[in-house]
Amino acid sequence: MRQRAPECPLDSLLRLLMGPWTTYILWVLRSEGETRFGALKRKVPGISAKVLTDRLRKLEDAGLITRHHAPTIPPTVSYRLGKRGEELRDVLDELNAISVRWGEEDSAKPAAE
Image (cartoon, rainbow, N blue to C red):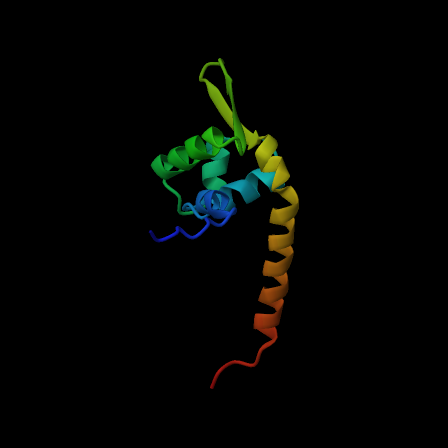
């Protein structure tokens, strides 16, 4: 009988984070703090309301964000990083630093002829 290779311990976390727009949404909530749905949609250009709703539900189910519903007229819904999302704060900051550094390195390269 063939033995199964052990699963990567990061597999489930990486699958969640690889979802469309996920890191962008987390970055906005990390940077802006609690954000209403409409503002979040404006800060993630190109995302549809349907996809944003789907991603937010998945992130909420995973404990990365929390949803706050205020019974006002009209009702207001806002989102912020949850406990697990807060645990990713340093990771998001480090990814941002790497992205900025790589962008600077790439822009300093001479243009291809």
